[in-house]
Image 1 (cartoon, protein in one colour):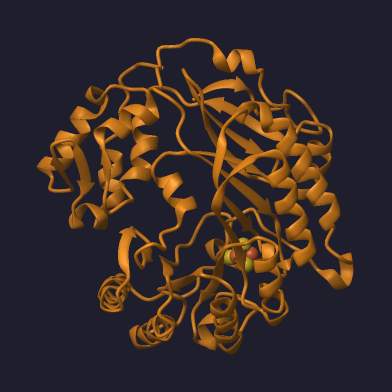
Image 2 (cartoon, rainbow, N blue to C red; image 1 turned 120 degrees about the vertical axis):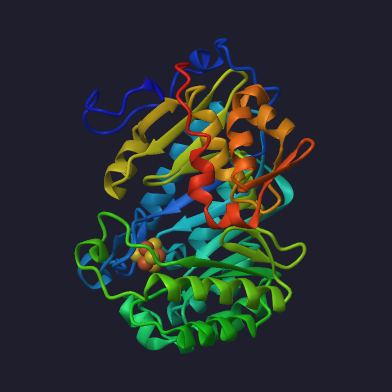
Amino acid sequence: MAPLITAAGASPEPGQANPDLLALMRPSTLNLGGVPPLSLYVHIPWCLRKCPYCDFNSHAWDAQQQGALPESALVAALLADLEAALPLVWGRKVQTIFIGGGTPSLLAAATVAELIAAIRARLDIVPGAEITLEANPGTFERERFAAFAHAGVTRLSIGVQSFDDGCLQAIGRVHSADQAHAAIAEAKAHFGTYNLDLMYALPGQSRDLWQDSLRQALAYQPPHVSIYHLTLEPNTYFAKHPPALPDEDTAYDMLDDVVAATAASGLQRYEVSAFARPGHRSQHNLNYWQFGDYLGVGPGAHSKLSFAHRIIRQVRLRDPQRYISGAMAGRALSSSTEVSRRDLPFEFMLNALRLVDGFNLSDFSARTGLPTSSIEAGLSQGQSKGLLQRDGQHVHPTPRGMDFLSDLQALFLRDDGST
Ligand code: SF4
């Protein structure tokens, strides 16, 4: 990555300002045909408690000790941040909005309504845009679901994870299986589409217990499910204090259960971890996987933005308080860097090869500004190893490629000496 603005030490508090627009417009060797679709991500950084496996930028908020969440201060900062970033996305329509975290369902519905209205006043949101909000299934959050729908949220993503109280406790979740059932019933009543997040290979989880959770989730005929293997990420409590997990063979069997049960229930696997009924794919996530653009506001939020001759990535200040003061001073960024030509093929493949349908070679050129010759070697190797298939202009991972996705993506990690 070639730095436009360096992250390290150049300025103390608060963070960095957005880069000079003229610098972003300068010619380079990269030629994008146009800019891709644009999404907006809004990060809400607080949770009731930090889960021991979580490596997201989420911070426990203890209302007993700390009082009410500083919702107004966060909204003011988010809007100041958004306004400072507007010149980078001037004239572009926003296709989807995702309010993630953290636990955005901790926010009052009135705050969510104010936020969505204020975003609409500042950005050109396409009619009928998908607006997703991540929700935890606690009683307190569930009681807000109807009001979230009223506030303009069109899709709820519910962090169920398991329907077994023992497993939920083992991964430090604050909700119970009964609360998860009640939350899904409420979501079904108020949203035309919703997602259930589930996790397998949890501490102490047998294959029977997993099959039971999967069966209970699919009994709702959900429009969309996202199913993840629990991984021990660095810098988490579980990384320091690893729990006893199901062995690798059991985890593979659990994945086989996922593939068989979702297909039997009419859900189509369209991404490594995502399964949907027709018309219910996550438009926001599809834009990530298709190497679209996204502007991320909020603590630690990431952005990827394209210009005629370059693609930049930005990261906001991670600490909520630093972010709030930084954004109010017009300096919410922790870093802003240009993606180098050399890194673009791998970055594209990290996303596009997650999709069962893969991508068209013309999309690769349009989204990266590079000729398809820059990925020819990786494509040939992928084909010869049986990890991907190429039908004329179309490329998609084989089932084996989906199983060995990191190996497939790594074929595009090339150092050809260019910058
Ligand atoms: S609720 Fe979600 S974001 Fe919050 S700590 Fe747990 S896993 Fe992380």
